[in-house]
Amino acid sequence: MATYIAFLRAVNLGANRKFPKDAVKAAVEAAGGARVETYINTGNVRLDSSLRSRARLEATLEEAFLADRGFEVPTIVFTPAELREIAEDAKRFADGHEGRHYVSLLKEEPAPDVVELVEAAGTAGEVARVGGRAVHLLLGPDYHTATLTNAVVEKHLGIATNRNLTVVRTLAERWGA
Picture (cartoon, helix red, strand yellow):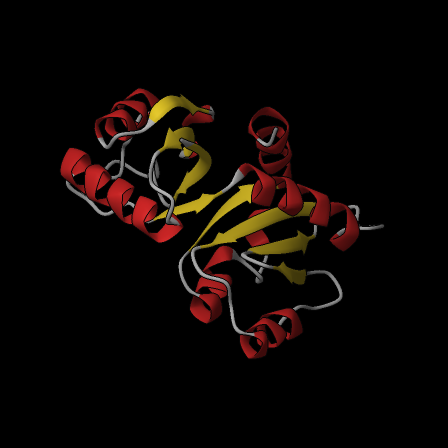
């Protein structure tokens, strides 16, 4: 069995996309996940699985979530080593940055030409740095007024889900071993 960390996109936002972490855990276990843990109610899941293909695991979980909730839940899976690398990249990408730091986690690795497009979309106060399947958004003090958002990332790079750097680092420490 291999260990994975799954990030669910757009759960527990508004009245129609409720997916409490206990229900997430039960759905992952029903889909064959073992030693399942969740962290806060934003769709962060650690699991062991006999599946070896990331794409197959994502599809299996997405099918289970749709069956359980009745709505699609895009799911983005990383290995513990990949998650540790994302947390390490944050140090390099954000050197000297004192504002907010969010990470958009991508379902697919982007092509170099679109990476350039997203990184060029930044301004002096908002910067995007791409490392593999993670986009580090270095923003000013208020995420809600930022123009460089997960929606912009998705427009250019495809399905993504966003976490603040504190959550990414916490999960890398807890589950990245």
